[in-house]
Image (cartoon, rainbow, N blue to C red; front, top):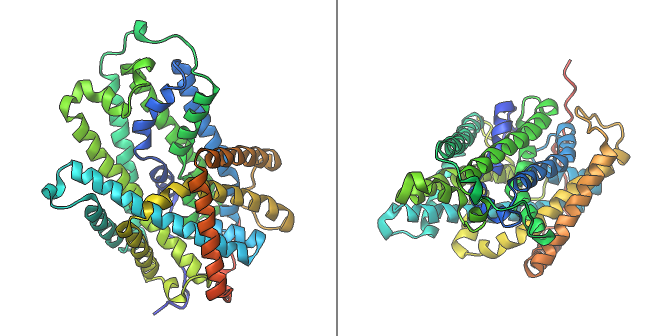
Length: 448
């Protein structure tokens, strides 16, 4: 039975917000990407500068998200902003796009966890990564059914554990003898193309911070906490990434780092020896498993919001007494399981880079449109120098979208074609639907 209030509980504080940002960003990328970035330049200063620039890009891109989430705290996140700015049809298109993206990504992450478990010998060869990934999905869905407070605390614990492990890695690497200064290569760059590739990798390593806005409806004071968690979380990740790179460069000179496919393991190999692969595979289970858990939680909220908005069946819009959209969480996981079992997540995951970039741009455009259409909308946090900052954010992200499409035009165009097919089928067979009154975005008053 759907509760009459049909609402989520406002139980998440700043600690959860920071954990959601850190947990959505930090994965295996930081352990592998330093080697690719080092191929762009043989200068430690340039390498660290590129990682810092990636943080700046993320911070600028997060500005319109922070303003919109503070003003319109809605579990639909980007779906709610785009619908409010550009109308019902675009809201439906974005809902279909984002839900498919998140479900296929969850399936992919489960498969990766399964691969790590196979490498650790789990199942003793009797189970492959697909089956172990499915079991992982079931376990994490059960965990995310325990209530909003419990699942929120779980995300804080998992994100903290990832941070502690990475800080431990930094300490361990700095405790080893440093690379000989003579072994370091001169201060030269491999060229603009290599620098561009490095920046694309870095931007991808920082991506994920936008998931926070999906929890804004459940935060106790979204007007204050969402901007603080967004910017604080990105800044914290930037510091962590810089420390990891400094520690790796302490052990490996840039020329040697540039040839590494798994930089962190190679750097720590002198200490862990043959056990380095096991250590970092175990970290992979923790890191990607935490990402997957947050993905299950996030996707459930998106399905709930779409159902409450009348886009998906209304039966998925229920919330239990502990604040969990239980039906939506299980429906999202069932959808992800279909992708996992069919293997279609492999193709879909290749389309998400360009589609995700299109979502970023759509949210930024929504922030601009609502400044004109609803100038009196209560905005607890207003972006400073809004016009300049958002213009820079749109320019950067539009350029990234063009590059992503040029790099992989087949999957980029396939992704947009898939969205068009889904939207066309929805409008043809499901109709526009009736938008219920409960979908009006919430506007929180400024604290006294």
